[in-house]
Each structure stands twice: as structure tokens, then as C-alpha cells.
Amino acid sequence: MIKEKYLGVEVCCVNQKSVLCEVENIVEKRKPSFIVAINPEKIMKAQKDTDLLNLLNSADIQIPDGIGVVIASRLKGGNIRNRVTGIDLMQNICKKSSEKGYSIFLLGAKIGVAEKASKILMEKYNGIKIVGVRDGYFKNEDEVVEEIKRVKPDILFVAMGSPKQEYWIKKNIDNLSVPLCMGIGGSLDVICGNIKRAPKWMCSLGLEWLYRLIKEPWRFKRMTVLPVFLFKVIRER
Ligand code: UDP
Image 1 (cartoon, rainbow, N blue to C red):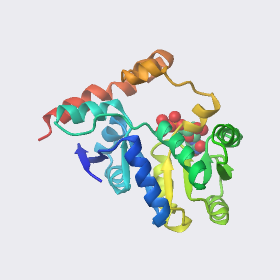
Image 2 (image 1 turned 180 degrees about the horizontal axis):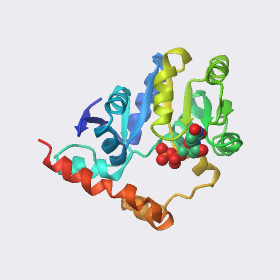
Image 3 (image 1 turned 30 degrees about the horizontal axis):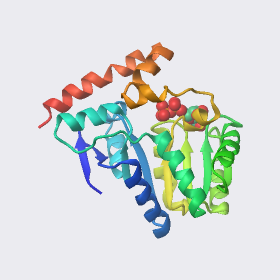
């Protein structure tokens, strides 16, 4: 898999289709691997946090989740042309799993959310095997790990926000014996309709950030990282 690097953080040059092929490979080979979604906010955070930088780079697949990464790639003559958003990838993996018979565990979000999301996914993807659900506010980590080990999923989605979910995956991946782990942030809330996504036309114009800004104006400060990120990328040799 070809990777590009922006301010020290690796991002894979992939699209939905190529990641899905890789997912199939990972599940068939059963070598524990994990997917992390990369956006400018995470890259900027990693500038001041070496542990986070190493964590992001230690993932097997870094998907270009934010539009800022796509713009950076264009500016630097790279080959990343489209976003591969975590929520779309997660749902595509669910679809593939229903076709291939891969089993899934949903971990994270508030009590009841993963359960509701699993019902929605079962209605949407006929035959999908969801072998376990668990909220993301547990006290006893060992108990959760044991629960996952007992049901032996092929894929574990962890929705505990970033970078908490990635640290959790990294810490437990060797012990879990799950071929594929992926951090999915607020995706379970989106599936349940607790959070609305931008309309398709806005997503396709790369304006999802504008939608979120209108809906959640307090995110403004977080969004100012995009111009700073691009400025730094341009100056990077
Ligand atoms: N969450 C959790 N455990 C925690 C903290 C957060 O399960 O200890 C869940 C929270 O309920 C929400 C998700 O993690 O469903 C965080 O979503 P957010 O959109 O903040 O994540 P991002 O994609 O921005 O990293």
C-alpha cells in the first residue's frame, strides 16, 4: 500500500474499493491489524504529541478521512484524490461482512447506542453477523476484553472518540485475537440518527466542515487548524 506523509503522519493513498480489498485480505490472513482515520486536526495534535504521532503511524491503514488531507495531497503533487470517510468505510465493511459472513463486535458510545445501531445495521445489511455490543463507558477493561475474546469477532469497531479509541486498540490488539480493529469515532451516533450528517451534495463538494460549522458553531476554534495545517504543509520540504 502506497503511503504519503504530511507533517510526519502517514496517510494511505487509497479509495473505498482498495481499502475494502485490503480488509478482505486482513480478515482472511487473520493477522491483527488496525485502521485509523486521519484528518488535519489529528495531524496537528500529533505535532505536539510524539506518542500520538507514533500511534497514528503504527496503524496498518491510515485512511484520508478529512478534506484537508486531500487538499494537502493536491498541493504537494500527491495521489490522494478522494476522502475515505470513516463512517462510509465502516458501513461498506458491514456490507462486505454480510456478504462474506464476517462477524462484527460494536464497542463504544453511550448505553444503548451500540445496541440500537446493531439493529439498524441488521435491517440494512441482510445476514450481517453482529456477535456483540458494548457501550464505551465501562470501568472494567479486562471484562470487556474477555467478552470480545469469547465471541471471537472478525472485526471490532471501537467508537470511543479519538485518540482514546486508538490508544485502546493499540493497548489491546495483541491480546484480542481480532483480525481487524477500527476506530469509528461518533459513527454509532450517526447510524442511530443522534447526529446528522451533511447532505450528500455538500459532502461531494467537500463542504461537510461548513455544514458542521453551521450546526455546531462552537467548533469554529477546532476548524481554524485547517488553514494552519495547509500553511505548514506548503512550507514542508
Ligand atoms: N465515547 C465513549 N467513551 C468515552 C468517550 C466517548 O464511548 O469514554 C463515545 C461517545 O459517546 C461518542 C464517541 O465516543 O459516541 C465520540 O464521538 P466523537 O464524534 O467525539 O469522536 P471523533 O470522531 O470526533 O473522534
